[in-house]
Length: 243
Image (cartoon, rainbow, N blue to C red):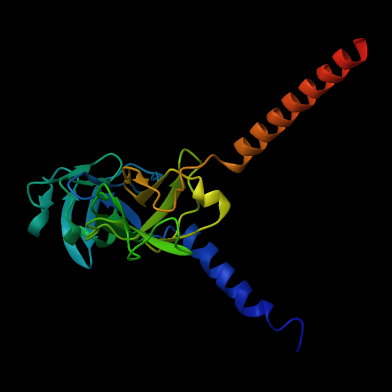
């Protein structure tokens, strides 16, 4: 196989991603019910006219010395900063998601604002998906449950006791294995996260917890006990010699 053939597609994908980022073509996420604010780059000259479009339809029109005219569902909840052409749509709805473009002083700007309006994630709950999961099971599947309609895209992460949160993942499921480390975990929590919010569950008692002490603590106790026994034996030898 040619050692150079595999780099072509990867390079193209990387360049496409960088180009998309540079042009501002990534999605902008806003929370449902909160203001949706779009701010064009600073304009070089005084702004005398603005036209905003949404999916090819008019949002508003304004020309110097004239009133702002709003259209459709944007009437009564939309504002325009005439000095910057900043658009504010109050009480954003999921149907407000789409592509926005702006024309300033008769010139259509190149940037497209791809907007998505999503809900906050709910407070999740950790549930055991595997039937009859206990300290004798070899492995169990936990799931991070909640009503996630309208919240996507979102990620899940997991935490054992007070450890750091684990890496974000797309799946709501989490497999725990019955190893020595897991046996000594008392509680497990999950977190849901999207671009506008994050929520942590109440901890679930680990069904695999055996009630014993962690290996590190056991080792420490063993060392302490061994030291005590050795010290006692040493004292016994000294006393025996004095007699």
